[in-house]
Image (cartoon, rainbow, N blue to C red):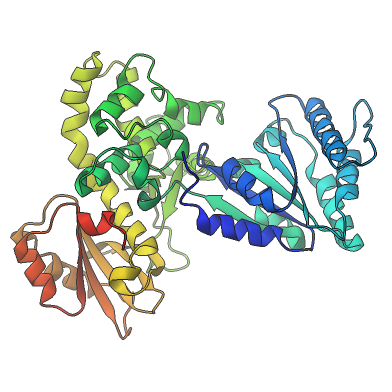
Length: 467
C-alpha cells in the first residue's frame, strides 16, 4: 500500500522536528491508522533512534532501549555504550543526550507503542523531560516522539513548555482511500468507503479487483476471515472489561446518537451519568468522535457520538451480531439476507460525514476554497448535517441525501427554513446552500439549484472526482 493521504500531517511533523530547541512531540490515534508509518517517513530527514516498546515488564523495556541505543552509537562510529545490567531511565536518556550534536541535524528519539510503557507503569516521563531540559540548556537539538494510542501517552497540556505539539491521526478521508477501494462507478466507490472505511490496516487487506460484497464476505464473514474479529481486537487489547464498551459501540453502529440512546444501549447502567467514563475512554482510544453543534454555547452539554471509522461501524453492526449466532450461519446467505439489504440504511447514516470531508478537503474547485470549520447544526426546529465557515469567510449550510431526492423533499426550501432558526452565520455577506446526493442528481434538482446564485449541487460524481 502506498503512503498517501498524509501530506498535511507529514509536513506538520517534519516542521516540528526541524526546530533546534529540544521538545517532546506526541503522535496518537486509532490502532492501524498509520502512526508508525507517518513517523518513520518523517524522521528519514533527521538522525533517528527508533525504539518500539515491547509488551514486557518495565525492566526489560529499559534493557531493550539500552540495546537499541548501543547499536545506534556503533552505527555512528562512536565509543561503545555499555549500559549497566539494569540501566535506569536517567542513565539511558543521558546517553541519548550525548548523541545530540549541536553542529548536526536534530536527533530524534522515537518511542513507539508508548502505551506499553504506561501499561507497565514505567516511570520514564520525568527522566525524559529532565533530559530535554538539559538539551535546551546545552543547545543540543534533541526531540523525543512518543507514538501510541491517545490514552497511552501524556497529554500535550501536561508537558508545559517542553511540548513540541501533538499530531492526532484520523482514518484516511475518502479521496485518500479511494484508489484502494473496489468499484469504478462513483456511487459504488462511496458505498465501499461507507462499509470499509479509511483505516490503512484494513485497506491493506482489501482486494480492489473484486466486488465490495466479495471483499465483505472474504474479509469479515467467511470462516477464518482476516478481519472477522477485528472489532474485538481493537477493544480487548486496550480494555480489561470490554462488555459495556461493546454495548456502546453496537448502539452507535446504527448511526450517530445523543447521550440518551447511547446510555439506553447499556442495559446494566441505571443512571445516565454512569456512561460518561466509558465514552471518554472510547474517545481516548480514537474509537469514537464527540461532536457539538457549531452554534452551541460554551456551557452546552448537547453532544453527539459517532464511531470514528465506517469499517468499525460496519463490524459492530453486521459482524458482531453474527458471532452471537444471529442470522444464517452460511456466509453467503448472511450477506444476501442481512448485510446487503441494509447497505442503503447504513450509508444514509455515514453519508453526512463524507459530505463534511468533502467541504474540508476537496471543495476548493467548486467553492473557491475549502472549509475553515466543518460540522453540523442542530437545535429546536433545525437539523443541518453539514455546516461551517469557508476559509473565504462565507458561511455554508448543507442538506444530504444518500438516496435520490424527491420533489416533495423540497431540499432548498427546507434548508432555508432551518437556516432561519439558527443565528450561526447570521450577518455574513455570503451564505451558501449546498445540496449533497449520493446518486446522480435528477434534472429538476439541477434546475432548482441552478436558479439560485447562493446554491451549489454536489452529487456522487463531484464527491468522487478530483479536479
